[in-house]
Image (tube, rainbow, N blue to C red; front, side, top):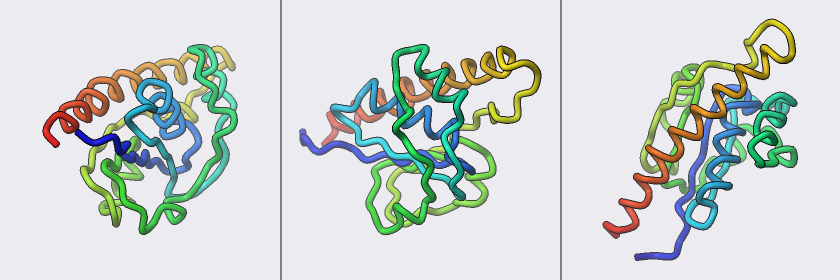
Length: 148
């Protein structure tokens, strides 16, 4: 068994909510075993409602910034995970990417209604991202560690 952290890149279109939440969850839940990064096919800013939804569960992503995948080209990753359908189409192959996964989550930035109604959508996506991170990445990564 190796002590080397597995490197994970979460990719979404704008790197503003879903991929940022996934990065925050992985760092929080298994930062001792995984090195989490996120990027977008284009960069914007981390959405305030994503920051707020994560803060509600004790995870501070306010210091994270939106980045493009160009920042990571040429770097090796054990996992490249697209978290939105547009990124999966725009980024069919990532150089240096190991295992490729696609997790389709609805875009919380498209939520309408009051701020509370929009925040409810961010919470649903936040919780779905946590579940996939725990069951498909952390559990799978643990199995890979034992196989090495």
